Structure formats: C-alpha cells, structure tokens
Image (cartoon, rainbow, N blue to C red; front, side):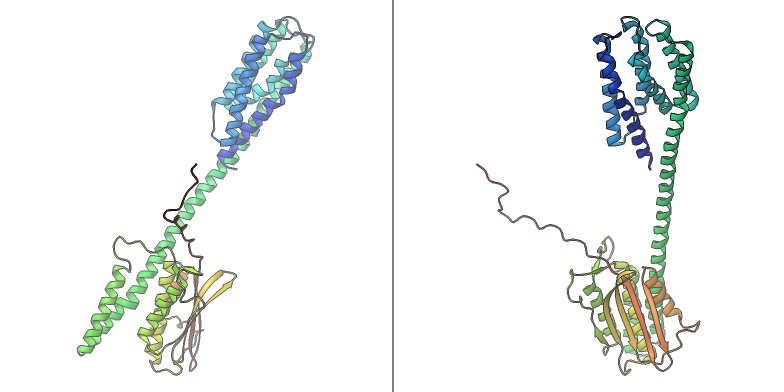
Length: 411
C-alpha cells in the first residue's frame, strides 16, 4: 500500500460512515417526535452530501484533502449546537443528530494527532451534554456517562487504525524509494562494467594489435599492414556511430551475423560459415541489443584471430562458425560457435582463460548478460560457444493513410 492508497482508504472509510447514517437520518426526519424544521435539516443534510461527494472524489483520484476531516468535525459540532435552537421541544427518543458523533470524533482522529483528537472528542461530549441540559433530550446521568465513554473510545481506536494505515503506506514508499535508488546504482554499475569491458577489448584487440604490427613491420607490406591496423584501432576508439549519432535500439539477427561473418572471412578467408535460420532477413524475427551485438562481434573476432594465430590459416578442417537461435530457461539467445582444428589445450586448467580469452571473450560477453562455454583438448582443437540475449524487434510504426484517402463522408 502506498501513501496515495492510504489516503484513498481513509477517505473510503469516512465516506462509508457518512452513507451508513442515511437510514438514521431518514427515519429521524420522518418521526413526529421533536422533528426539526426544514430550515435546519436541509442545510445540514446538504453539507454532509457535499462532503460525501468530496470524499468519493478523493477515493477515485487519490489526491489528499487534509481539510476534509476537519470539515466533518466542524459540521458535526455545529449540528449539535444548532439542534438546541432548532428542536421544537423535548424529545422522548434520542435525536438523530447524535448519530453523527462517531463520525465527528473519528474525523478528528484522522485530522490530527492523538492528543488533539482526544481534546476534540471531549469538546464534542460537552456539546452532547449541552443538548441534554437544554431540555431537548433528557437521559439519566448513568446512561449519559456510558454514552460519552463509548464516544471517547472511538478516538483512540480510529487514531490507531489511521496511524497503522499511514505507517504502512510510508514504509511502502520508503521501500520503493530504496528499490529505485538501488536499481539506479545497479544500472550505473552495469553501464560502467559494459564501458570498461568495451575499452578493455578495444585496447587488447586493436590498440595492442596495432602496436605489435607496427613493431614487427620490416618492409613496405608490413608498414601498410601497420597503417591499416592503426586506422582500425582509431576507428574503434572514436566509436562506430560518430559524434552526435544515436545507436539503433536493436539490431536484427541477420545483420549481426553478417558482421560476425564478414570479420571472420577478413581474418580467415577459408572459414566455413553456417548461418542461423533468420540470417538474411533484416528486420524480421529476433533482434539483438547493440551492446550485446558488439560484444558478440568482438568475442567471435578474437576467437577467429586466435585460431589463425595458433592453428594457422590452413588448418584442416578450416575454422568453422555456426550460428543458431535457441530458447531455454534463460530465454531466447543467439548462439555463435567458433571451432578450429588447431593444437588445442586443457580447458580445465587455471591458465586456460588467458588474457585474450578472459578480456575480449568471457568478460565482454558476460557483461551483456551472455554466456561463454569452452571445450578444448590438446591435439583436438578448440570449440567456444558464445550466447547473447535476443529480444523481439520493435513494432513498426503504423502506416500513414494513403494520400487522397477520404476520412469521412460529407453530405
């Protein structure tokens, strides 16, 4: 329950209390015993009718109106005071105006604290005594005392109930604020993790690779390769989209696979590609978040580069990339398997996740909510399975109406 819901609940209880008085008011107004004139009855009933409408409006909209309980207190006390002057004579039965007392003292408990509400309750009991001493309605002293105590019991009961409702709403609001703050911190930490992983991958895959190529350049061909590597590193550092350009919300699976396949063929022209079923259909089927797509591309590129570096471009069979979509407990995912027939290594050893695999592959993919599974053994090659989350593509905007289409029929 929120604070807004607490205000609605309190207003609903007050409104139901007003409605519960309708039968008493109707029967009391119809009685011939000391019936007050219409000049008194109509304003009092109208005032409570207006307050009832305002209470119901608060229930519907949840906007707190702190003055409404005070209005109920004033209306109840004024009704008691004016009854003394409006009543035509002594009544044999209790005047129906006394049935307003629980609502009056209860509204006082809603309007203020326990001490002030108790004072308002005592004031109201004094006004009830005024009705009795005026001769409009006379009861034995014992009955009056018991009746007054019953009225005063309503004050702490109503205050405790209202305080419990308001306290519950306040705790919910505080919990919501803490949850939103924690979510904000988590989102900031996740964004920082993504950015750190991205820069680690750029430094390892492009900057260090460009520096190594430059250091090893011995001839014109080597220097040309160094310049190409330097340009690629600068392009990654400056960003893919350029200044001021907004990245796309999601990327179709086909477009992501084309980027991975293109990078693999650039490093290993003999690579064998097995595209996922939705490849070649941009804009249809599943889509991938841009951060996840970049992580997948970076990881797959590093794996192909490792295969070329350690197994040679002429490995038999050549490097194979296989893409597919799979739905499991973690939701739908895009899987890219990179397999080579190189020397292999013991995947279960502590040093299996070397710097390149740890930074550019495992940490990069995990930072976007993906998974990496490694299988390798000396002499059997290496197989790495990359998996990143897949989302549904955004719904296309509605087609604009055809030009010249008639919106209606004029007569």
